[in-house]
Amino acid sequence: MEWQLKTFEQLSTSELYSILKARVDVFVVEQNCPYPEVDNVDQACLHLFSEKNGEIIAYARLIPSEILYPQASIGRVLIHKAHRGHGYAHQLMKKAIEVINDDRKQSAIKLHGQEYLRHFYGSFGFKEITEVYLEDNIPHVDMLLELAR
Image (tube, rainbow, N blue to C red; front, side, top):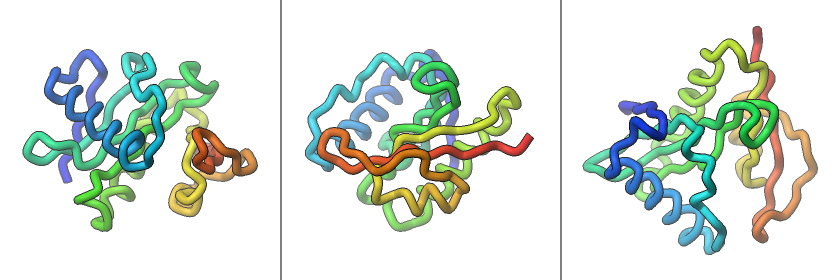
């Protein structure tokens, strides 16, 4: 799988449209969860994605520290429905952690994940730091990965 890593300014309008469409398709439509997907955070982030024929098949938003949390964060993690079950999620998370870890200023990565994925995120070393709570009627848990320095 070929990965692209771009700042907001480096994204073409077609790439940005494809990313936003994929995020709305998964997080708003598929999960039946109306919420403000476009949240004015994207402009500060790195966007890690893979596409095929102009369609986003895997995506994660890498959020710098001090934007949402004191730590760097990984969010909006998605695999297009038609491409699930092929190991792309593991590849995506491995690459996202690697990118943040390469920024030697970071000591930890925080994520705000859906509760059913806590074992998946735990397989990368993330530890639960909150109890499960509801957000938009979906169970979530906050998790933290300490980076070795």
